Length: 287
Image (cartoon, rainbow, N blue to C red):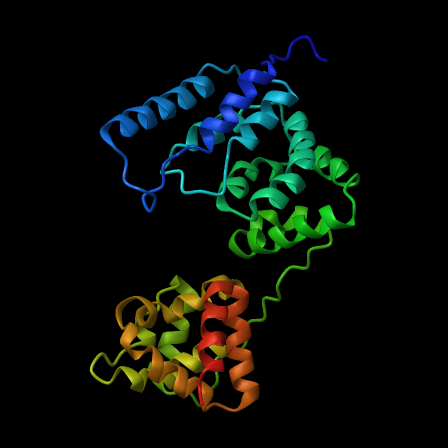
């Protein structure tokens, strides 16, 4: 053990892990006044334990901080843990991350908390140690990490070097030409989306909302290069503001030729899998 690194005993580590997982969830049972006071004290204790850590913590403490993150809504509390992790010795952090990640995912599933915590491994100083540790994973561990990395890369291209090293294929970023025979409003919608990510021009007709469907289908079907992550945003006006129109949208989608429907669903699934699954489930119920 490097004598310059600061450690904590197992009791301390166990307490930190338990406190990190004890954050009350808004959709949980209502708390009594006494329970609320206990919850507040627990949060303050968790933050204080993290705050008193120096930058030069050892592998066991780094692991405890990672395990104190759970697959729950943290309401900003985990920011203190992320700050601690960002200041650790890079190579050591990469080693510990490789050791913890497969087991964390196996226990908790993929979650934003571990993704955010491990953003440091995309840095040049951390990558070699992380990838060296990854060589010790068995097939199941490698598979579960690659599955998570597929989502992480979909959301942030910073993960690309790690993904390439671990054999996670980067999504294609085909940039199709905007068809010459498109009307001016369709072309403008495509150009604006590619330039800014704005989707409002895809839904010009608020009164005849279904009248926008053909334009939206065509836009989703088109390859937008680096905007591929934002393709599912084209459905936000439908899914957020006009949900009552979803059945008509699904009927129109179901009426498309199978090849077009497949391309549209594939583009949405790649950009936002939960939305793709949602639409696919609705399509299966169309008579």
